[in-house]
Image 1: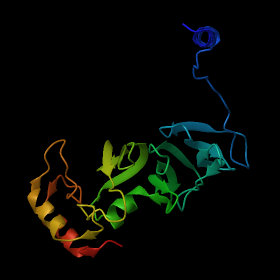
Image 2: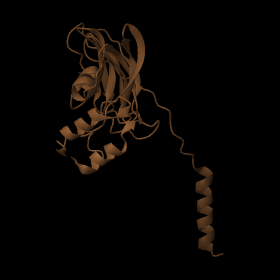
Image 3: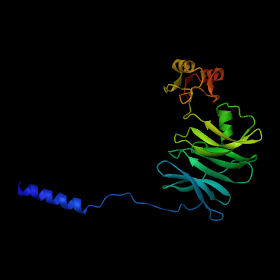
Image 4: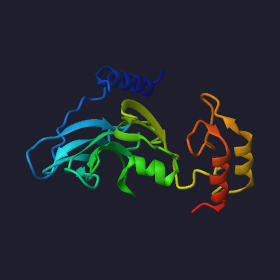
Length: 231
């Protein structure tokens, strides 16, 4: 070998012998609290990458918060009516959707928060926006949410009994656009008709707009009512 080759080998050997493995470092930090009231905060959930944390702080009432590394801790407010008291339990993988509990005039009620709509009663969303019949149900707390922000779980009261529940909320503003073309049309209708009847376990049932467990007349009427370009 030439002297230059031996020199290169020697340099590489020295680098490999002295290099420090690039292990990830552990970190720890306090997240602070909301302004006002006694200093008290607790965190309950985080986004997939840890960039968003949700929980409860004091401001001066107990208030749900959403923390980001860039913006710090920001209060999410509370539901109208009742004592000011809210708490965030979980967030979607991207940190865009937050669920928890607030105090309304009717007591504990589950909420859903997004930057566009702020804090809303989850029951109102399901009933008013998607037409579900939740007669007899009180959705008391939303305690978890799937990574995609579509499926929410919690507990509530149903006919006087305490019962766990699960709700799904389609993403986007046009859940009736089943083929993703930006409008509701013939292909969406054919897809709905092709899935008519009970929803198969673990299979796509996106045409079940009213979340009854089967695709039927009500779902057909919803799709026809949304016919045309998506808003």
